Image (cartoon, rainbow over all chains, first blue to last red):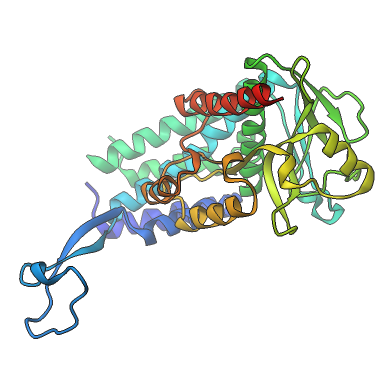
Length: 152
Length: 222
């Protein structure tokens, strides 16, 4: 398994590449996820014996620690890198699947902003062709290899 | 075996340098997700026995939908924006829209990602330039596309506020990923919610069932 320093270096490299290809929003979402932690766990918080501020219903737990506290479980550097890579690929995979679903029903869908100044936001969904499917599959394949090596 | 450092350039090359992957901006991801949920509404209506067809704002038939990229008003004819007309036999006709504003209880208008409206009110609003009222909505779906499973808690707080402005029973929280804290908050308030809604996934089928229940209730009452 690669060390933390190498994971951080690869994370930055992948994040830069995503930003350069207009997918920086995925990096920002992943940062948010990292900041909120992998999850939470119960924490036993002990107060000093002489602490006088005891909340209603807490008397009995005073010596054992008070209930209701939680702490954040942090991601490791390797998990952060894996999260970024997986998020990027899930966006590609979801877009292909959604476009396939939409174009089974409609020939194409065009998205156009109401305000003309926003015209760069417009785009058209077509049925994904073989080239796009191959590109998405190639990306998923390289991701699987990448993650397998990260976990080795 | 190549190391992760050797594999990363290949991943980056596949990811970034390949224009054939399609439009992958954040707004494109959100827009296509709203369209996907709109399609689930149409499928649910059909499953309940409705005829569904597409029309533009001038009531001309459409085959290839044109949808908004940002919230707009139902009367806008800036483009030939499309909505679905949902007709159950011998029942009032409904319309399914993407990204239109609906006036809440406070009379302030809010964007609804996907909304099913009473057609009479929708038509009256198109003619007069007003926004439909929350009372005319049967289904309002708030659609959240996120690539990671960390849905911000902010989304659940916003949704609870949104439910207060509309009728809670009409509002659905729909997301591409799940999140325990968000689900816990919404479950605690007994809100309609469905997460992990993506093509070919069971939650999408469950969401269609939930929409069907709404249509079924509508048919029974009208």
